[in-house]
Length: 180
Image (cartoon, rainbow, N blue to C red; front, side):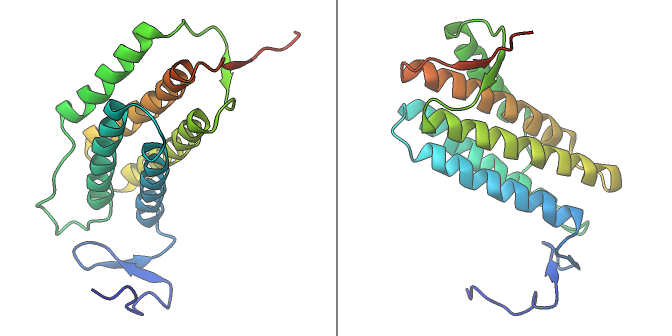
């Protein structure tokens, strides 16, 4: 497979299925942001962290690739793996498990303290941006509801994972506390 095709030199790209759209189309922005999120999760996964978390992050990357394929496909494509309740439940179960170990949250968390949890916060922000773009696409073209739920839950997972990694690394979280 060639890396360059020259077909996008004039500012368009092909969706899965063959339809061409401008590279600034909301669909391209949405799956491009999901791709960015996949890369940030790969950065987290490549750190020295618990092997169970690495396995969960790997599953998340696979699910995000499926989401990117769904978003990158035109109406003619029908045979794509869809996000399932099980995919969502895995994330929810991890959040619940981490929450049992963590102190209740009383203030907003300021990212930082260690690079690994900070990477989680960056990924969370990218996830929220991807979610907003997918919602914008959904206003024009229906996106499967489970994709919307998965993206929303994933940002919660990344936030909770950052808190869990702070605890695992024995690094105190920094909170936003003002004098007023």
